[in-house]
Length: 248
Length: 226
Image (cartoon, rainbow over all chains, first blue to last red; front, side, top):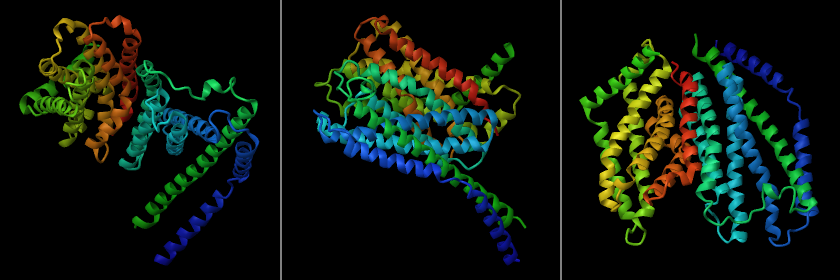
């Protein structure tokens, strides 16, 4: 009896994995090419910055990572709203996948930031507005992931997470302005950032940054695809366990 | 509309009766706030740092830490004997349940703050009475914002495994704007300057209150769904 059960399970499993094979590798290859191009651009093509030296090249990772973190959190927000509206597991998976990617890239921002800041500002950390709000953003989404880990799987977890996904994203403008005004009395360090995108930067630098931004954005979609697939597989395994192991 | 207010009032009344019977919440909140202030006095040398500079921050940290205890208990108490189930089965609007809890949390916190302020005045040698009206406004707005988002998150975290730990973890990053705003405005008030000089903070905290009450009304149905 166990044998037949196993066989049935294997059959289901095989059929399932056949279905999953349709995921095309084009996106992955595109991302690989984009990253190779951005590596060439960052380390060979783009000239070294005059005042800051070689360390300034970290900008081509720092800004795309920051962009990706914000983008992922926005997707979490959208998916959370759509989940509460449509009540489909699909949107819950999207929110989860995007939140995890966002936290990873937000961590990268918080790691590359101090590495860049140390030789330029002379300190690892400054309670500058943008740094502080990134740190708080990171905390919000780490707590979001903790909430997911704490709740039992099911519609309850999805609903609670969706509410936090909405509440957390709506907090971003408040955090931005409050931190900005809080620290506006102190002299602001001169940063090469969004203001410098158009003017003040060499066209070759802008081009490199754009390539890097594109490569990171592609990477986001690769990660999303993979993470969504993993989560769906997990659901299926749960379902198979329920169907074939516990009943009877 | 009248019925709705009755529902809210019933929840608030229930919370007050419970508190009058047990007297657990208020005493623990008050003592905890006092302890926070005392620990701050030990950790900061008041002869070097001016009381006026550190005072507003200490006051708000004490309020909010003690407030977290209140928020934690607010829904945990309901969970203990399956009271939440009863409340959800009762023929009342979910938003009424939210407002009832919001009002009782808000009032408990205000009572605690009313007892804390004189002690703060004595310990930090700051004369609050001459700035009492603007200070009351700041405290009302700040506490309301804290309770608005805190009540929602309290109802949310009660469903988690380690609810009492998760509430502060979820709540503190989200309430950063209200903390900064309240501390800034309190500092302004205590230094004797008019609040109209910092309209940006006044409007930011007000917006925070309004938006988070609105968001809670919209999402509470999803949180309190069995």
